[in-house]
Length: 181
Figure 1 (cartoon, rainbow, N blue to C red):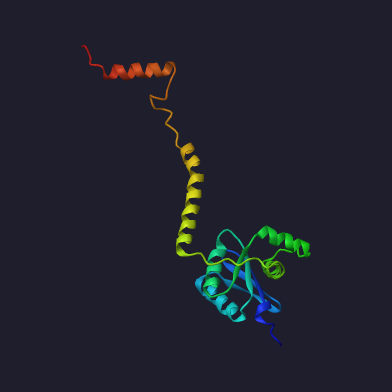
Figure 2: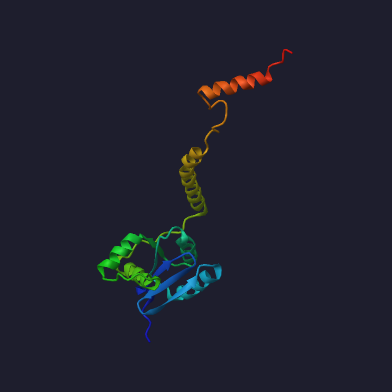
């Protein structure tokens, strides 16, 4: 079987928490790997010899970052694409079924047809800045929730009011006043 030149290969990867589904376009059967270190090493060892023109994956809540970093470190060109664009592309080509293997094939087809721009590997300082910004956003969201959940106690003398409050103060004052007997 004649292998196509490396310049015309495109890889689509559907990323989930525990595994990735991979499709190489054209002609190579799809496969899946775990997202643990051994699975990523397997992924790199299978894709690097193919020298694809582009590896594309959807952004998926951060799970794609580790996979993209491993592939970029191996010298592969990686593009992280918008899932909405891929879904619209799938609809346009009539591929509405939704399984991980089908999604990987659609992402590979999207990469071939659209040719999204690969992302360079960010340096360590940029990665740290992103982590800090993510944490800041989390804290900003949490602040109003935490301040709303801290309420003053309702049985404290400074909070009570009304006639029962005056009676409580008189009783408290009477118990601390020196007795005249």
